[in-house]
Length: 319
Image (cartoon, rainbow, N blue to C red; front, side):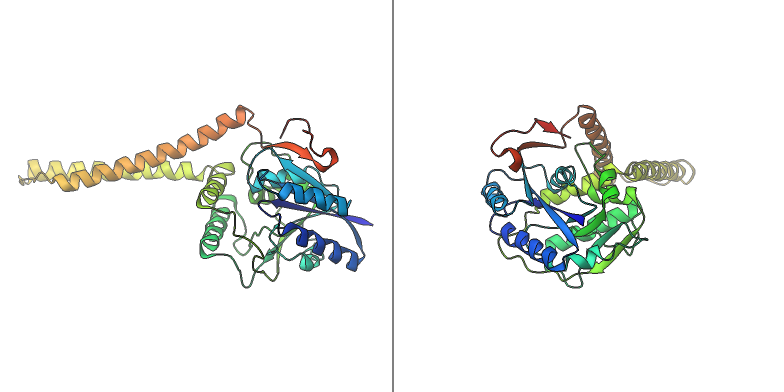
């Protein structure tokens, strides 16, 4: 009997994760074709989620819990979970019930000979306008920077073959970008429509800062296109400046025009150019800083404890 592995990053989900794991168990047992394991990664050790994971582990031995030492983010939590899976097929989903486990076999059964990863697509999404905006930006960025197929929607609910997950966990830098790792590993994707549910408890943990960090990961992890755009913009502005200087000289010397000081226009141009320069410098600094942190072996995540050794530290930094 094949083994299904479910990986769920948990953040402030003590009130919801029990219902999610129960639906997973009931759906797999009702189908009867697979055995299962559930890897729950607690990415916020300050709340009650870890205690709930320990309680769920006592009820279901198929559950394996991981507690991070601090909040490392969803991508790092996924990578921690992926390094502990054993199944031939790995399913990732959310902890809040919006990605219904009852529909998992729509994704799993779509993994045919021509497909390595199946993503859920949502005809009607129940996210906030802010979250939807962030998803659209992320989708555009993945298409432009990483070569993602334009008609592919990459959701947090997906099923992947084990060899794709094994390739993804080879990445050990402190800024993992899961969608980019999937695109780098294969070109065989598929979307399957899934009903998107309302959150049963609480609010989304995605803040503007977290979305900004996700975008920076996408920009810097898999492409140098932003640096090339900065170079092109620098050349364009230099050319415009040269042409403007030639026009001033021609008007003053040849046409004998009286040239006004134009302080407001000069200040506006200086501010525009300085702003562009600072933005480009910041972009270069972001690349350099991330390379430095990678070379300095900053951990992708650190595990405080697992349900196999509840209350004990497991080995220190993991990467």
